Every structure is written in structure tokens, then in C-alpha cells.
Image 1 (cartoon, rainbow, N blue to C red):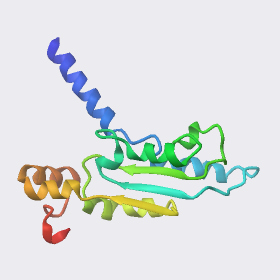
Image 2: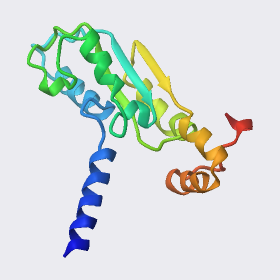
Image 3: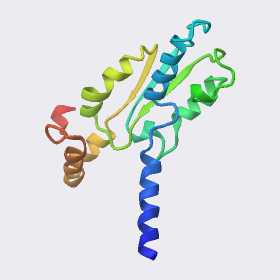
Length: 158
């Protein structure tokens, strides 16, 4: 019974830290697409800042700097669905961070979806996992397996 609870706790923890941030690109796009279908809602929006990167941006395993930026510069909720003052935001922040991601995956799989949001600004913070993989062969193997990289990260490819 003890091993069951240990395993369940581990799975729950992994799920919690891997879950997308509340203000992720999918939710932002879904929310704004639903607004476009409402003829009585004016579609002007505040400038959009997309934060794209690895776990340092995602903020589940480290301090969430995107929330700090939001609380410093915005006067609304970090998630459009939770925002009770719709239309009053002076900056919209979308967190496109993902734990464990590397530069190749961002370039090949994430960049286009972020650009489709038509952001006014993008903060790109990547490379930590790539550098770790260069100096740790087990981590390199892990990234190749998890993300389907065509080759292990190297200094030459950064």
C-alpha cells in the first residue's frame, strides 16, 4: 500500500509540473477565436507578449517570471477566461514555456504556432537543456528519445 501511494504521489507531481500554464497559447487562441464570433464585442486588443522557452519560462519547476512580468505590467488576470475586466488590459502575456524542451523542438514545432498568435513582442529563452545535453550524454539521449530530435544537441548546432 505504501508503494502505491508513493507511485501515485510521483505521478501526480509529474502531471502538475508538466501541465501547461494557465495562460498558454492554446487557451489564448481559443478565447480570442470565440470573441471573433461575437458581433457585439469589439476586437481591439492590448499588445501581446509571448514568452517562448523551456522550463525556466514554463515556471512549474522554477520561479514563474512570466507571472512576475504580468503582475508588474498588467492590470488583469493572467488568463483571459478568468479576466473580469475584459478589454482593460494594457498588455496580454502568453506563456509558451515547456519543461524539458530544447531549441530544435521550439524551432521546428512551436515557433509557427506562436507566430500564428500574431504577437507584438516575443521573449525567447532557450538553450539550457541543449547545453546540459552537450555535457551530459544521458541527458542528451533522454532529449533525443523524448522529443524525437534528429541528432544530439552539440555546440556546432547551437
